[in-house]
Image (cartoon, rainbow, N blue to C red; front, side):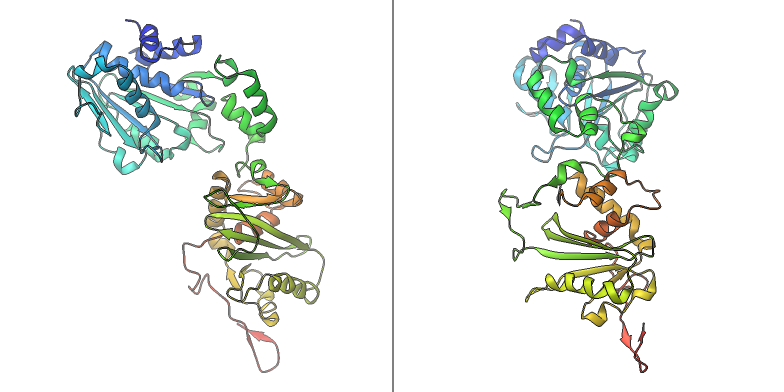
Length: 433
């Protein structure tokens, strides 16, 4: 049976021309490096699952196949392996040829009587290492760390040495998948690409809804399966998805939580500014792992004597009997230390040089998981988030304040080089530290 007929036999579906070209390449011994870049729900993972079954039950050559993917949280299995198990379930005639436990496949792979070994590994570097394989599949590579992908590549051995990487293109330009996608010939990859728009199982109504509701970046990557140009990439993903007219936070039970719940915490940050840069104060409410932005103010061309009382008034507005807000401020310049303490505000001063990389990495994860809500009235913040990149020198004051407000330090702030600066009035009425 050829691979196209086998695909129809296993799935009950008719392969598209794009899928037929890919299926033939997946089992062709001359194709060594294959990069599959396509939109979501376009059948790329299904094609690879069918190709693995073809290696097992049609070609029947003694080979070892390694599958590397992030396990699904609900099933605890890689999506590609789940599709293989589904084929086994729908076609019990394959079971006598497989060495399995009763009617159930082993959770981390199986073996066939013809000598094919299939290993399914979670995308953890220590778990991937040391597994010798003739064929390696990296599923949803955009979710894998580059070191995991390269560890999977290091597992290749033998004459076959086939390396297959598939994903919807990741939005971060630094990801190794995008590097290979930008210059596949140089890297030795054959590229297979298709979009939801070219399939016959995504309706025009569904595509129109996505076009109207997805950001342009999300539509291009997730629907069209295209990598983003440098001008289209953003450091923070899903910014548009996190903007609301009235910012709300949802509990796990999907109940909308009102501002000021006794289960929430108020976190405030201050990014000091020297003209022409403004001093910015940001206020967020944290509920579990979720955040909502409550308030933002900036002060430009004002003396400390003028804007410090305004900052203190904002902070004291969020005082609670049982808990005062947590307040972070940039430790530079030091001339501002002590001003807020004089207004009965306790401040943790954070050394941005030491912490900025961690602060931004955490904020990036918060946006990636869609765990923050921002009122659409904060247009400066939204604009800066969309334009931010790690080498930006100006125009990021509002983002700095947000990153600091949401920050959960890994290094305790009690240490001298990072920690709280205690302001003590001295004998002549000024402040020492």
